[in-house]
Image (cartoon, rainbow, N blue to C red; front, side):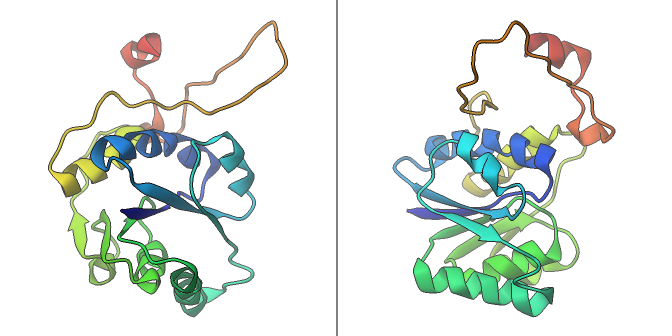
Length: 183
């Protein structure tokens, strides 16, 4: 199975999408995973789990809805996918997936984008963004996932300290005290 995942446009959300990439083998053993990342933060993919293809989307090069659709078509000419997973809730992300003509295209219901998705799901309220992304696959497969792993691959020189800021202005990205202690 060939899976194409449209990653989020924001740096923090993109980091949180690592969890769903780690879970894909649980849902789809032996799947070949490719990703679409926004130009400007696509360099973060160097720290992600290995993927087959990295497609970099630039709004400057693919302007407007027509450009988004054409970008999806360009991907289709390079590779045919069985499943397109839209992590962003945007209309344009679903349209991009439609352009790829993947056999199945999934995402959350929002902005009238259901017309471009073969399966659109209601988003549960109060989930952390990591859980939200994984729940999309859980709803699609009707299977539960394992414990989410959000780990970037890195090799930094030995440091005395690593500082992690677990706060966020958006409640969907904020860890509870109990969850922060667990991490």
